[in-house]
Structures are given as C-alpha cells and as structure tokens.
Image (cartoon, rainbow, N blue to C red; front, side):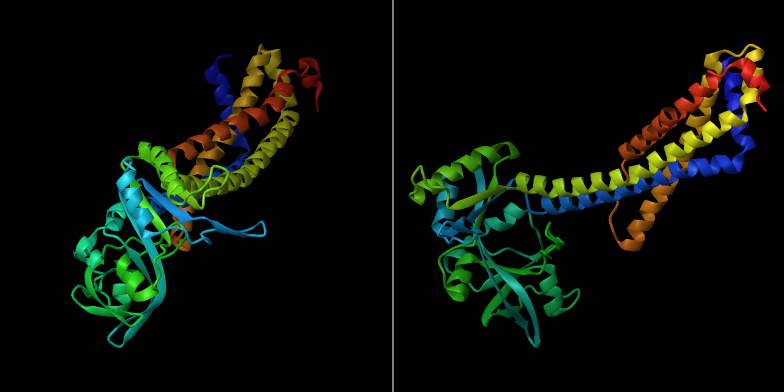
Length: 406
C-alpha cells in the first residue's frame, strides 16, 4: 500500500468521528492559542521597555553618588553626597571616550502660570543634557552656555507641564512661569517622550540651567548625579574605566577603599529591564504550554480508544497484505493531523486573542513569526510524541487475534 492510500484512510477515519476529532484537538487548540497570546504579551512588554530605555538617549552613562555607611550598615546607593559640578567638568575634559557630560540636580515644587498651578519637578542640567537625551524642541530653543554661566532665569518645559499650565495646543515659548516663587522665562518646548522605564512621565518636568537651580532654588553645590554620553557603544566600557579612575583620584580614595560613586550604563539598565520582561514571557509561555501537554495526552487517549475500536479493521488490513509500517504510519498520521489541525486553529485563535487583549486591556502585544513557528513545531511534536505509542500498539497487533476480536 502506498503513502497516498495510507493518508486517504487516515483522513477518512478522522472524518468518520468529526465531533470526537474536534474535542480531541481542543487541548492543542487552547494550548497553541495560549502560547501565542502569552508570548505576544511578553514580547509587547519587552518592546515597550526597549523603547523606554532607548528614550534615555544614546550611549548614556549615569554616575550616581555612593552609599553612606554607619556602624557597618549601608544606606544604599545615592545616599552619599559626593559629586560636584567640578567633577562633571573634570570628567568632560579628562575622559576622551566621552562626547557630552552634564550634572543633573533635582527639586520638586509648584509651578505657577497666571492663576494655574501644577506640582512638578525641576531638573537643573547643562546644555549638553538635551544632546545626550536626543531630546528635540517642538518650538523655541534650548538655553545656552551663556545662560548657564550667569544663572539665567530661563527654562525649557516638557509637553505635560505646558499643557497643564497653558492649556492644550498653547505654545508657552516667551511666557513666564514661577517655580517656587522664582520667575522663569520659557525659551523652549520639548517634544513629547512619554513614560520612562519606571513608568514616570518624562514630559512632566521643567529644565533650567543647573547653576540657576543651585544658586536660586536649592542653595547647594552638590549635584544629584552626572549624566554622560560615550562617543560610541563600543567605547562605554573604556569610558566607565576612565570615569572610575578619575573620580577615585579626585575623591582621594585609597586602593583599599571602595568607590564612593556608582556607574551605570544604558546597556546595563536595558539588560536588567529586558531580563525581567523576558522572564515574565518565559513564565507565561511555560504555563500556557501545560495546555499543549494536556492536549497531547488527550490525543494519546483517543488514539488508544481508536485502536481498540478498529482492531478488526487492522486485522483485515494485515490479512490482505498491509505491513507493520503501513499500520504504524496510518495511525501516526492521524495523530499528527489532529495535532497540526488543532495547531492551525490555535494559531488563528492566538492571533485574534492577542488583538483582543491589546484593544481591550490597552496592553501592547507583538506577535513574532518565531513564536508562531515554535507553536507549529510544538504541535507536530505533540502529535508524533503522544501518537507514537498508540500507532506502535496498532502495528504490533497479532493479525489472527485481531480478526477474531469482537
């Protein structure tokens, strides 16, 4: 008997019990659909994180103050005030692997425009900050080095601040706002960036020269952290080493002493953030895969029942010349067809389900061709793996006993 005849008999046997075949496929359908939907959700979360990390800028390096320690107990990174504007200037002039450097200081407060007020954050930064962040202006311009030197009362505002203080669609450039009673002329409106990797609205900020913030608002010479940009992605490790050596020298640290600062690169931050979403995606896919295993067990169960029901048929086929491999191939094909057809329906349900999740829950999803390919391969292996034993059992029946079976 040739392969074509075997395939016809297998398809005919499945068509005879359509409802049973559909119910058998149900586990595979649910499993494949769930795997695709869960992977789409995981990939969507990963894509969002990657976009948010990319919004930080290009080849970004962040230098934070170190940790304070009392009686051997560390208070955590950022609790020590050890970084200064002079440190930032030294890093820029003495670290050739860096392109831009800026100190960054922070102050929260109330911003007022006319009779409208809005609680927001003010960031004291240098002009290089916007180049590091690759943050373009929608209208107006950035403040300048000259503004920085004279601690000018100017600022650049984010889209959220502009909307809340001046109204939707209003251009704030040229207008004056007060931040903690300090009048500031708005010289630029930034393009909207959206939330960062931590979910914070990046557009809900006011940016002013760091000298203005330090001298006219906070009254401190310390800087919250230093932001830098390497000349290239490959130069980040070299730049990190240069910064480490320079700051240890400037802070007069002995070899036995730990760094009183912490350096984090954009690559490290991206790896940590994406690892979390990757782990989530794997967990969701693993949970969904359980349905595939259950579906495979269902296929094995039904195929064993089918072998019992068709024992006489198997005996007749063997009596008229069917070989062991013909019977094995027939039942194996039936199992694979059930699994693959269920997989195809599951893929369609998974794609539709992903879209429903995206629209209904507002959750971004990314359907990867790789995930669909993996679902197909998994479905085939489920059919072969769980269908082999019933097929093997059918092919090794004794023809005489099979013909006598009632």
